[in-house]
Length: 314
Image (tube, rainbow, N blue to C red; front, side, top):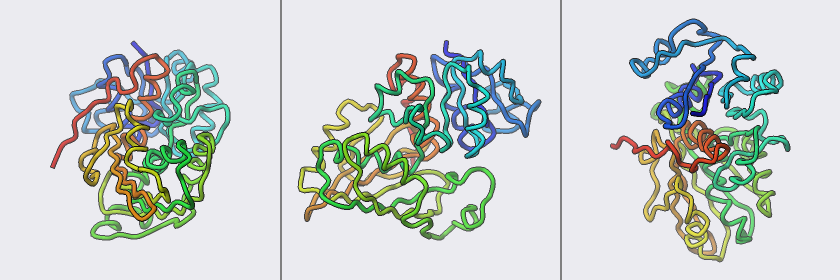
């Protein structure tokens, strides 16, 4: 069994990581860290886990954590860098924050496009949620040298993307029955997208408009790729052997990926543009389940091991 620990288990991303690990057939979740709730049962902190685990929240114990096979850093941005420096002897660190996504000595954990590097790495930076949804749509065209100009993206996201602590304008009551844009052309995930695409052979200009949506979880990204190629064929070839990417012939919907590790992608071609719509769960494929996919690759397991879960619909 792979012995794992999660730091930041009380947050949205952390508790989601715990959820996937508890059901993984090859993982033993041995340690959950929450400095705020140290000493309390995890099931009291995350009531959805009642009756499913006896784990107690702990404080950071470097010696204990370094004896595990893998440690997931599901912390706020900035904290993961400090923890990684302290846990230098840990066999495997998976950082779900943005702290290491541009670091050359950390593998970028986009499993469909960087599997070989991930499998050989012991320091993995899990991509951001917007970056995951958009890169999965755009990377096939970049790899095929089929992008004919600047790319435009409009992507809507749920409120859990801002974390468990309420933030002005991002707090769910402020989003209810409302749509608004934010960080237009200046979202922090653009840098990692450019870096990843550059490694695939090109980095087109990306005009990105994020949209705050009145849902709790999920991302629906619409990417406009100038291309005269057969967009559907390009995408289908790229993901022919990707078990967690599902090609849809109708519009993807976030409800069909809610609580899952899947990315659903649909393509419409016309007038010199491929319109690629991608849907993911921002806490699943956009964070926790992708981190578990990286763990699978490092340990020689199928990328979807323990991750093929059916969504609840409607």
